[in-house]
Image (cartoon, rainbow, N blue to C red):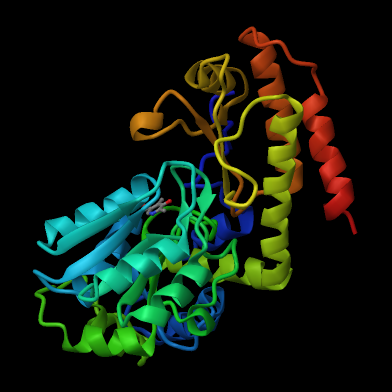
Length: 384
Ligand SMILES: *Cc1c(COP(=O)(O)O)cnc(C)c1O
């Protein structure tokens, strides 16, 4: 069946039918009252997924446009910045900073491990001229959830540096409290936990960050966050917004808030635990330890079969799409996305198909062991 896809990559994710439908609404004028009212209805829901009372601005672009906007608005050439690199998205943040001629310092961690806040604190104590610390919340390339709350606390204890967070693959699926934790800038995209197609990026910033953004002389035009903030304060946008995506966003926020954010976060925890229990039962190694593991994506590092052979077989037989590894992990791992429009029922289906795929590529397993472990996990922590 050609158009059947079980999309289990860490974004883009499947889209709920009601969101799909909402995006088919008749086009409206971007300067009309309908658009103003739409933006007004969306704004509170966006603020609450970031845990902020400040404005959240929405730009049309992929997630990377949001990362670039975070860089270009907060710092200027020759500024010294620290990028914490735990995988390929941390590396991307560093490359963006380099493209803007910042003095980029990196603290690197082995791929598959989380950053250690105390080490960053020590680094900042020894390097007091750092203007901003860039970090990835969920490092999608390895399935690590970095301890952003603790990182922010550690940074604030010794430094005035801004804390700038790439939350693209987890905001909306994992608790994020911008105001309370004192994160300065946080970016997310539409195609991950928010259950929308790619194309929108959302940026929230602290009062402290907005003060710096307002005064920053670094040239920028489309990505100038000042324009977006002053427009949204009047329920408007500086340029034509991606209206169809906004129709969908209103509905996806509605789904998240009617489920309740706490319940959404618990669902993601449960899907992570089910997935990890399954591979443990099948005796197939996970890339990360339990403490570092992200609720939105799980990386598996097989030692006796080829990850990409399994992925190909699953795509062919079931339309099940898993992600491969990036950079030096290419070919060595596969990654399962369990975020956004995904439930424990989907996890059971995914694991069941993977077991069949494993059997077919010649890996010796007991059919059902993984599914059973996931079921048991569900009964222990998920059923109410
Ligand atoms: C998906 C993702 C992005 C954005 O990538 P785009 O391809 O530009 O949308 C950025 N950071 C992380 C951590 C991601 O997972």
